[in-house]
Length: 434
Image (cartoon, rainbow, N blue to C red; front, side):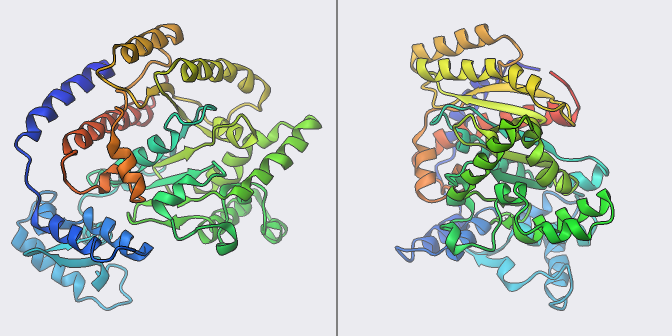
């Protein structure tokens, strides 16, 4: 594989050249932006509607993915719009919208179109029997960009329309930051008592009756799957991206897991995989885990479940020292934990908040890669760019930001994320153990 840093340099130069030609904003994006700013206080429905249509496709976009012309696409779309409301492939009124001079369809509508006409099959359809890759984004140092990496990798994967990946994003950080991006209507646990977090599922709250009913392990696994889909998995503005949210109350899991380990029971490390992921691993192509900045049982469950580990780190001496300690602790954890069910394919370091003009940042990255060896050296870095902060203020990722003055930086950040995801795909989907 090509060196990640060199790929980043190549992409940086490419986008810098392209940006000088990309000063305009499409008519439909202008309409969306105007609608989104009609009210100074937008509710969750309005925000998600904006995001859904921001990532929507028009007739021309869809035609580029099919063997048909845009005129033919329109005729075929009309067939689905005219279906009865109870038809599974019916395109409903809230799934298409006139923006500017043309019609835009949400990706939910587009995927119905693909399935109805049996074109552009999803990754899971093309690879039957393949189970989800489990990407754990973890570092026990706070403020290194774990949530930025996890959320943006998840959205990047979900937006790959030619692959049609089904992606699940699990929040294991009791702070619950991912709710801010994808499920901000779930403000606090008391407002969402019917919503189960991964910690709730691991503690088997509300599951006793199913354990009594199950007559076999296979039946119990099926009960777990149904329970998780009914009580924990939440929709987002992208139909193929789901979430399991976290709440501050999830720290209760740590207390109960610590109690088990004090009497020599190391099986809590297996809880996330055995009780949450295994029942649903056939339903997703990628499961991405965002962890908290602590060395605790919640974080251990993610380490045990992972088939790939991404370790975000900033090019700062204190953060790099803490990251080195985290990496050095991994062999001891796996030695004491039960044998893993699924093998780990990759463990890589991703530098975040990198100032490309700061020679110290370059030196820190070089020295860290040398000290850790090729096993952990990885991927293009994530630049220090205000666009991530701007997106967060809007409860969005950079993929939802409208075109503007910072478009060059946005595209450079997107290019870095593209290469991170590309490397994950290459290693994990080709079963390359690094």
